[in-house]
Image 1 (cartoon, rainbow, N blue to C red):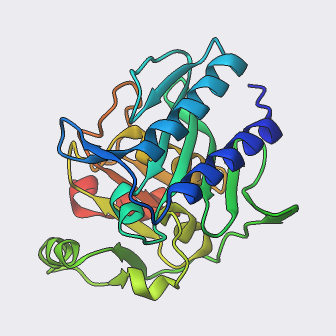
Image 2: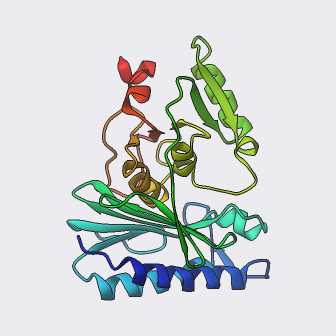
Length: 261
């Protein structure tokens, strides 16, 4: 693997500018076959990333939410605008996600937050860092916590988890507003210690492009992601038919009743 990290950062900054240019404007949008929205910004950023990656890494495959999908030994999994609904509503909870998979293992991840001018990067050879302006700051993994801090992003998920863990001790629900005002990928929150467990049983509703970048960065800090049953995530198909779990350790995942049993 030989990635031109600086070249990719430069392209992502160009994409950031596109998203900021269209933000809070009356941007054109369409409804995709799955009922989700896609905007002119999604398409334009996707074209920039697609053209760059195909030119720079012609032997690699690309799997994108907004692109025909092609898998190879090395495959990029990208989401040019993760959080389209939030973006259209003027919120800051959107980002650009770029991950690279080699033989079903995420080995590189980049997460860009245009509003905060921050780019998170991590791969198998380097510890994660945050790039802001011309500064690079390493991300420090928090100390291990015995209590299970379960990410609970909405009331619906609280209802799901209340039923799932009704007879279990040692699980505390952590809501989005407890994690600070700055939107971050949940895998970054796991590294930083705000949460240490994320569970998603919404089978088939998420694509590999939604999690690949965060998975790679988390893995580079000895974190773990599996499917809902504790198995390796299958990056050979676009949708996550078996959901996913993210945590700081596999031991925490393995203690879940349905994984252990």
